[in-house]
Image (cartoon, one colour):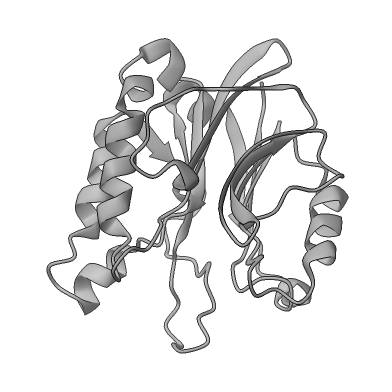
Length: 225
């Protein structure tokens, strides 16, 4: 199974169609996308619109069944169940929605909304959660008091593991911010134990050909189911 995590930068990208062409070229089984639109190339989707026709979604070439949840920020979470190679996967696209200059507040509310999934072991073990969290441990160093580390500790406490860190413990830039030359790491893919153990690769794709499409780098992970 191949999973793509990407903020497509829909609201300001000059090359939206090229973004979807890139996605088709890598043939992912599951896409966890933020700042994205619906698109005819995607056979199945659970997509929640924020504004201006873009939002947060789970997309797949396999049939999706939406996981219904009560949410404080419905446009910041898309959740769906998909079956691949007879294995049920619970896929969540999570967006760190910024309200009044803070994303960490909405992230904590979203984790609380998702708690019913996290506490069910049979659901959690085969769970993927990824997206542009707008969260970075480096923010705690640059802006003390934001406490982004608590958000990541909550993920770990729920029994979720960082797929990229399984293969590379070093920080990796995922956002190229026009107003900052700091190497921000905002995009992540976490998995429950069963999926994490089956993850055979996970890396951030830093490809200059994608720079005009989005200011975020995609994450691609593969799992042996």
